[in-house]
Length: 91
Image (cartoon, rainbow, N blue to C red):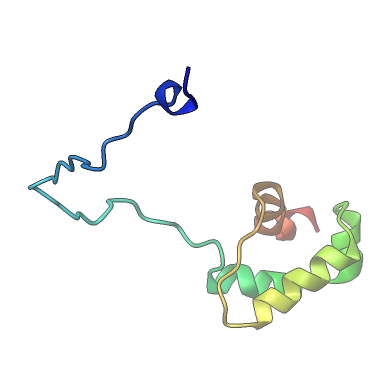
């Protein structure tokens, strides 16, 4: 018994089926930005002492303030965004 006969035989011709109707559509979703001017302004006005009373670390506020000062878009976790929005009510 030969080793060559036990191996499967692959055809060198591959049949390709081309799709005739290529339709590139624009996805219909919209991303809501979290980093509005109001949120940036609130983050910059929060004091470290008030932020600490809310139970967050000083480092988290530091990085949030750095992001708020830059012109680049940024995101916030849902629980952090909720507390930033309600910060004035808490204090």
